[in-house]
Image 1 (cartoon, rainbow, N blue to C red):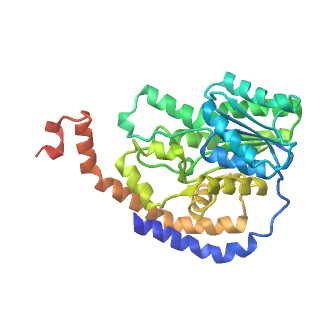
Image 2 (image 1 turned 90 degrees about the vertical axis):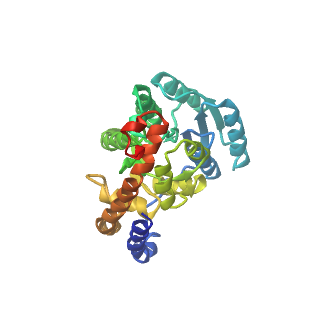
Image 3 (image 1 turned 180 degrees about the vertical axis):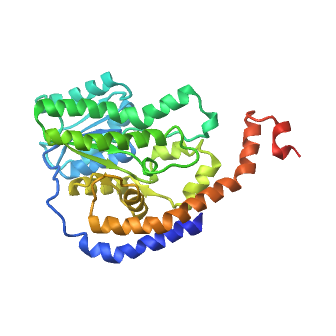
Length: 343
C-alpha cells in the first residue's frame, strides 16, 4: 500500500515542473466581494473555514447548521474576520435533511437582502459513518443517503428555484469526495451518495446553462475536521489503516482555500492535490477539462499508477481477512464453530 501510494506520487510529481510555471496564466476570476454567499454546514469544519475566507474577501455571508450554540460561536468568528461595517453576516439554525426546512432556511437568509436570493450557494453540510456493508440495515443506508446526498440536494433545489425566479446568474457549489470518483471497503453507506452528487452536478451543469447559473463540485480527500475525528471513533480498522497510508490529509483551511481557488477560476470539478487530479482526469467521462494539456498528463499518470494503487489497497484488504473474521465472531455475526479461526 505504501509503495503504490509513493509510486503514484512519484509519477505525478513529474507534472509539477511543467504545470507550476503555467498556473499563473488564467482568465478573469470570480470575485465574492459584495456577493451574498450562503454556506451550509457553516458552524464547523470546511463550512466554517470557507465562510471565514469569504468574509475576508468582502462577501456577505449566511451560515446554516443545526446546532444553535455552535452557530453562535461561528458567527463570532465571522465577525472577527469582517472587512467592512456594511457586510451582512448572519447565522440560521435549520436541519437540511428535508425539502421544507431547506427551503425555509434559504428564504430566511434572503430577508436581510431585500428577499433576493444568494449569489453563491456552498453546500458543505454532510457527514460519514463508515462501517462494513454486512452491518448495515434499511435505516443505515437511508441515513447514509441523507448525510451524503439529500442534505445538499434539497438546498440546491431550493436555491435554483430562487435564482431562476430572481434572474440571478449565481453559483451552486457541491462538496463530494475522492469517494465520488472511486470507493473502497467501509464506505457502502457514504460513497453512493457522493457518486449521486456527481451525477446531480453533471446534470445541473448542463441544464442550468439555460439560466446562466454555474455549477461546481469539489472532490476533497481526507479533511482534518471535528467530524472526521468523530467518525474515526467507530471506523473499521482496515479503513483506518488504508487512510493512514495515504497521509494525514489537509486542514479545513487548506480545503477551503482549494475550493475557493477552483470556484474563482471557474473549474467545474475542483480538486486540490495531485491524487485528486489523477482521479478526476482518469474518470472524467464527458466532464469539461480544467486544462486540456494538464489533464492529459494527469490521465497518463493515472493510467500508469492507479493500477498499482488499487493492487496495494486490495492486498491490504485480503491480508485483513482473518482479523475481520475475528471481528465478526466478536460481534455475533458468525458462530465461532463456523469460523476458520475456530481451529
